[in-house]
Length: 182
Image 1: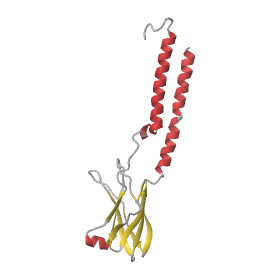
Image 2 (image 1 turned 90 degrees about the vertical axis):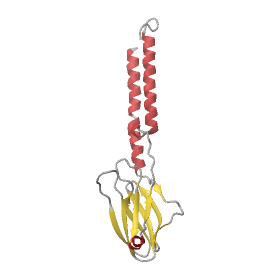
Image 3 (image 1 turned 90 degrees about the horizontal axis):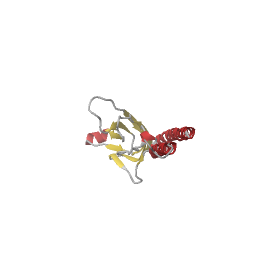
Image 4 (image 1 turned 120 degrees about the vertical axis):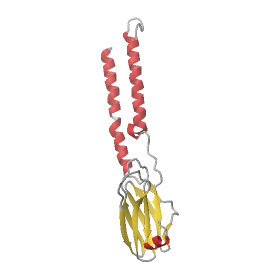
């Protein structure tokens, strides 16, 4: 009877160990997906001759489609809420020709933040006291990610309940005349 209990326990634990790598793979592939994209009709004016016509964000990188009526220089910087203390941020300037160009901008990962934003300005927009911001908003994270997602959490709960039931069954059936002392 003890041999059966040990074999069943080892089998249940082995099943649970197989869940971890699969959950890690799904998290890695999810990290490469695009997190946010602009709505189809989104056009944001930077100044009266420069506008953002499309954008997308994948972790750590904004891709912006910017349309300019004449050659101009744009400034890009990280935007968003920062914690108290000192830190650094990314800044870039890009020369644009007339027409539509694709501009990539890298943003630094912030501890505990779940969104990203970039502020864009030209000299004309700064003279007017304006600019444009592109933001992903608050990206929701899976609260069960530390447990391997929902499948990892529920398989862990199922293994725990299974081991408890198996232990109770063993105690009940190992006594000669029912449960004398548990």
